[in-house]
Length: 319
Image (cartoon, rainbow, N blue to C red; front, side, top):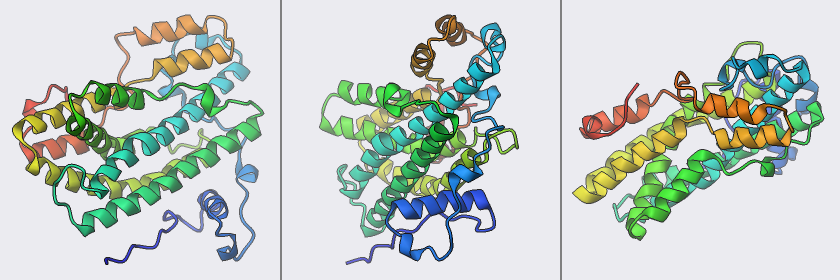
């Protein structure tokens, strides 16, 4: 039996007090308090009330007159909600898009003959994803405590990528096609999530706890992207022409969903805030043809498709 790698906490800079606090909170939550030999840094103590929770430039309505005319309290609450929604997006994708795809690989559901090396790698990645989920859960929890706003995760709808994945699998003709769709969505999410995490700026305007959470998560994802890329190449080589076409269509579907602003979530947020003129503001942003996609960097998927010799066959406008 191939020995399993012992799960480890994310790599972090012990000299960085915020990164140390994020990882210490993980260690405590995972029942490893006994291994911590010194007092744990406190996430709440490191929270800076004067910093923004989310960058204005990522708000799809940042230049809208309604947003510019709001009170600073209202803008702060929208930014806090944006961070809660960002974390929920990450957590939902990790739990319901990435891990089901990895689980297919771990159990060789596509009959590709992947051996123990890949099985161990994806099981380790699935353990990592649990840590990532916990990191983002902690980051949302400290935001709620410090800001004093309820902002519950379960008040928001399922995230756009998950909604589209569920619709695509429901439309699939048979269980094998459903599995290939699931695998395609996992591939896009795991190779491209670093582009999403990179959207949170490193500048000092943004809450240090938020930046540290994203930074720690992103370090693991560079490794995961390499695993997902290798697996996708191996799986693609074993597929029939029809299954290959289904996989490529699934990649396009997943990239389209992954790149988009989730206006359903924003409609829910302004409704929860009972923000006058908020629904019209979101409608205007959604229908603004000048609005760019939220995630624009799919260089990892493009590289994979070039390697497979199919980048030119896909109905996707590569940036």
